[in-house]
Amino acid sequence: MKKPLFNYKIKGIRQPMISDKGVVLDNKLFFAVKYDKGGFYESQLIAVDLDTGAENIILVVPHLIRNTVLFDNEYLYINSFNAILYCIDYIDLSIKWECKFGDRNPDWHIGVTDKSILAFNGELFNIDKSTGNVLWTYQHPSNHSSCHILVKEDFIYHGLSDGYFYCFDLIKQKIKWTFGENLYFKSAAFLLGTLIIVCATNGIVYVLESSSGREITNFDTGGAIYREPIIKDNKIFIGNDFGMVYCLEFVTEKSKINKIWEYKASDTISSRVVILNSFVYLSSEDNYFYKLDMTSGDEIFKEKVVSYARDIVFTEDKMILLSDKGQVDCYSAV
Image (cartoon, rainbow, N blue to C red; front, side, top):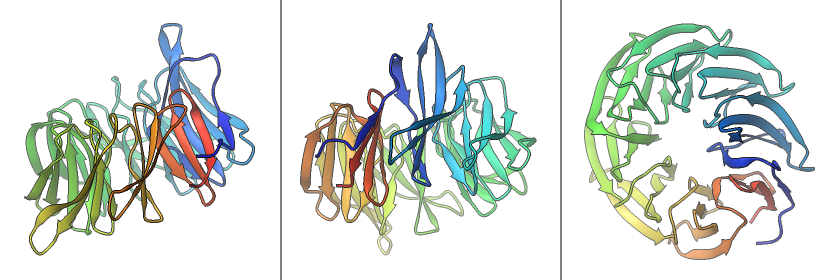
């Protein structure tokens, strides 16, 4: 890889940790980073200009920001571990509203509907997008979650960390179905419109029918799954904690998962898998960056970088690696 076009790093901070996913809007990269400050943690929400590397600190929070920055229409949504959800206008970078929800450290994943934001903090909160007011809450038997929230029409699909994966009817405000028991669900994605891919820390990828929660088939990756599955052309791309990367295909007529290829990275997969122009990109925790052929899984290159990436973001002409130590390394697209 060529030298970075620029590096952005917050100097003088201890134990930096970057948010799981960055968002690029109008050639600006939005991301969050938390760090040790006097034995506790402070966080910043930052916008970096991808042409100049200039920064704009939007928000400083005296706690952890660990969630994905979620963008919808003109607004960014982000929540912190002091249970405050922020709505930020990405044009003028002003805070439109903030909402206090619950008294614990919430799950950092949030979901968005046409009219509301969904967040979990011991219970499910439905928060008005326009005002930040809590519309209603739903109490689960579990008090912890760490799973993506999927939204489709009037239903959400979400997993509890010490319980089940479930479908919730937003209109009736009740659970439609549940799947599993005492499984730690970390991520989910839609497949073919009617199916859901659900990943758990037991290393198994489950395929569920979205209307009923019925398990159609599963695939054991052999290692804990913490990142979300990426779906492309009916194929599932996923990495696990043992450094394995899989390309799986759901065969509709046989209702089963076939393994197309697998690739063994040299350490734990640290980023989500990113697909671009028939190539697969990922990073591992021993500071390597990988480019694989999407069809065969063959290694195109494996190169050492400054620090392992927690996220990889592409624009039309740039590739950005977000890492704890380097924070932002911006390259010409590879």
